[in-house]
Image 1 (cartoon, rainbow, N blue to C red):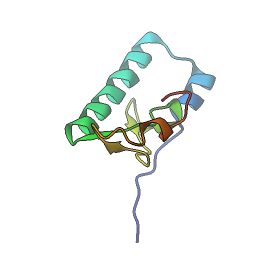
Image 2: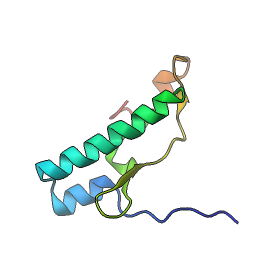
Image 3: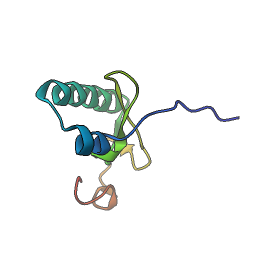
Length: 88
């Protein structure tokens, strides 16, 4: 069996329907920065940070998902091909 955490809507959905008061924007920005710092601490770069990859995790918690194009930090061989152009 594979057990996964059930997460809510992506950030872009929340922004479209709820807007983003400054307090909320600061909250999810700080959580995303913390998630990216942890990924970098273990030697990787996410390469696909978009509002679609930040999901509601209950309350005011958010989770950064989709590390499918994460790449070891410092290895730039495929950097140009990774992640959507809009956010690369």
